[in-house]
Image 1 (cartoon, helix red, strand yellow):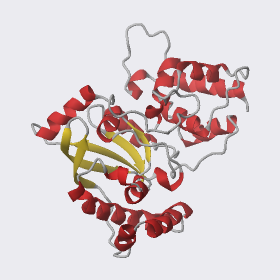
Image 2 (cartoon, one colour; image 1 turned 30 degrees about the vertical axis):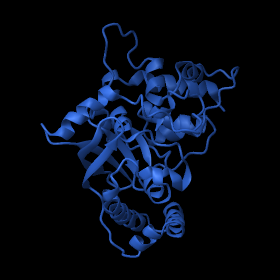
Image 3 (cartoon, rainbow, N blue to C red; image 1 turned 45 degrees about the vertical axis):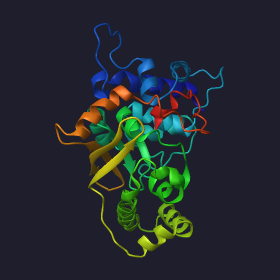
Image 4 (cartoon, rainbow, N blue to C red; image 1 turned 90 degrees about the vertical axis):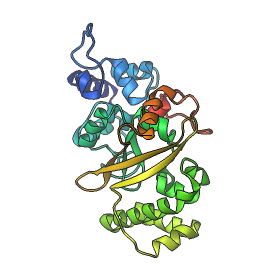
Length: 302
């Protein structure tokens, strides 16, 4: 691992980003042209001390960034695909695919839009409904996404295999969501062609869920672009919202956000989300925080 080059690369990427580009205030006493180290650490969900050691490029403390940490840094520093790949090469980690999997590189256009959605719950997901990155309001609304890998990283997979995945939705709405998820997955599977990831997930779901198998055999297809949802929040009760989707050009990623008509009860409840926070949501039980992260910080990396 080329730690000195890795540290130098991180410093130069940090210096080029202006706070406004990532939703941070400029501040009157800023001494550096770009971001501060602690700001990058915050954006990536890392401890400030851990990120500082990475930039210093010193091996004395045994700093070995994981693929998950590198992916979080690539998002925080707004790296393009070539820069992301370079970061992984310097750390001697296998370069992940650019557009698939829960560690996929978020497309910069979607990430830029997410940064501007500071007053509405929003997240970027893959076409298999794997959460890549989300804002605080999305975590407040939906709870923290568990740090699963493989098929279980997909909310669609968990919807049909884990009863807890449905707890945020009224039971009378479950059949509708099941149909929507399966129709959307049909479109994603056809778009991906002979993709091993989606083929494996569909095969496992057919074995584990009779409901999924029956819906899959209807061959209904519809890309999800907008839906009306009821979210059961543990503090605010049932919140009625419109769920909107903006797809990337290749359809592999989408920006998903929630909104409500002005003056509606749903709009009032959305305003309360930032006040309620996540104090009653907690870190998923039994989930160890990623390398370099504290338990309190691990939620911001998804």
